[in-house]
Image (cartoon, rainbow over all chains, first blue to last red; front, side, top):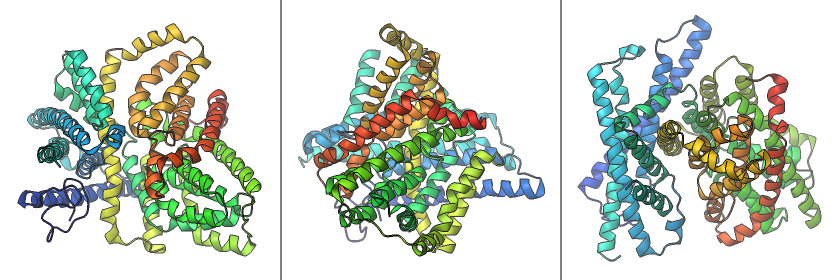
Length: 187
Length: 425
């Protein structure tokens, strides 16, 4: 399995703590790795469906002069899933793009402190985005809008926005807590 | 209060908070100040993503690029280029440039090129009696070479953010991209002749054999060319055709990739896509606010008080972009800077397509600029060399690329000739 905090490969059965970042492997951590599995499976499914849908449309248009109604719209909504799940996984693996000069040049203790600060900042911003996206979904849920593609309810397709921001929020909250514990313990 | 928040956001940026969070914080503040609900920001992000006809090509092209990088296509491409170009003085260096450009085009300068090709080319260059400094500099700076060739992701992102025709940008990048390759090849020949490197003896048989082996990969640029400029299919369709083709070639024909490797390849490539898109979302929402609040026009007023000529503006822009490129990932730099600069450059009468090529060339160089250009960091890890050694070895390459940049900047026809000649829209 992978450490849900730093993303490094660890043996979940024998390790009690992650050798890379010192995170404790407990029940909740196992829950996170289950979430990670689901994310990986769903993103693969969404990406491959997106590609397949485009290809099917090409064949239908050129050989049968037909098309799937709302197909193009569906493809663009599948993009939302790929993008937001990708962002959630990037948070899991600590691969979000940042200017990392400070973290490169600082010694361990101040670096840890900086990590808490930026982690906290990111958590707050993401929580606000999560709140905003929940309100956005609620509005569309109330309207009951659908897309022509099999009359899917649009709010279901949009669900990935709060899910994605939620996962990112959670992971940065965890990360800063972990950094905080490390600072307190004086590591 | 607002000033304090803005200062706090800027400090967070340089302490290393993720770019998307910084941009979103500015966006949230902007929406709040103009009296909009925060949900409007999500509406904006959602709208920009779900209505754009080209954005969905990015994950598809990236996936195709990562499959290629994971397969043994690199070996086949290098062997083929070696047979065709290896007999030249500096042949192996030119082979490296060409192969790196090919891979960067498909993987979007994410560092994959240096990781995939570095291990193959560095020992070969050392064996060919190229100096250590030259080899390191060559491979480090080549990690972003090829950004100007279609269907590179930074071009698509630029087109989306600047609202410029992507087909035009694809055509515009061809001549400047080849120009960069040629000028770096000439330098390689000069070095090779001076330091008497070994030449590769090529034979007709070798050319035929390597071409046959690499033939499926060699078709990819042709398929793309016909697809993009032929006008029969959309960009999204050509992306899906390409990924299907790459899967058939690498999984069924060459059997380099097994199906059970797919989840890992998808995860790795989609992490890059997710990291780009969440920034893009924040940046597009922020742009909505900036344009509403007429911020670019306010910046323009300040700049126009100091800079009056188009030439002086372009010089200032180049200096600014080189610094930006060395500090930020290309995608961060594109989405943050493009919306601010495009309207300003328009006032100075700069063609938006030409501006795009200037932008991308700058960022390409910025990747290898000290102190923290991304290529330097990746090379530092890949080749296990101190970063200061890399600064020194990249210097001649950076100087040459800056000269090329000046040429590209001051001769707009290099970017625009193909568009005008073929009437590409």
